[in-house]
Length: 216
Image (tube, one colour):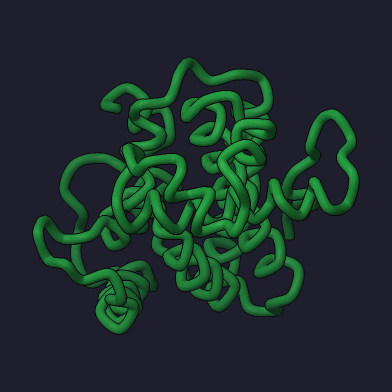
């Protein structure tokens, strides 16, 4: 079995007092929720209101929208990686670990947050490290499931992430924010399609992360 070492979700710099750290975490949580609901252009004073802090507090922690978007993307990337690490460590069955991860990962609404990532500035070292940690964690999960003989061999991490992204992207003009009942139902159909023995031959080739970066 592959093992992935867990790392802290976020390490704020410089070190903050406990009350300041709580405020910063509340701002990030509120921003994530509102980015999912309304997109990345939501007024920052609305984010501050949702977080229960003043505008001055928000700008003291985040100089501009770009820095807040960056921190939210890091937060989500680490949370999704944490889900993969926990599933791998706590589930004895490889395919059940993978299933647990994908059901937990959809709660982060990766698809709804794609506009943030698409509009972000060039990836820095911290973002690259977070992305690599996620890649290693998910690949370890998939390899473990594959070694158990229950995951088909013609899929890669890119295939998995594409489906997670598409299933968590709100339908245009649907006005439907609470659609977990549909997401998890359709996700289970996808998981059934990952099982061996495969019932069909997949067209094309498996998607890797490199493929996704080239088309983004």
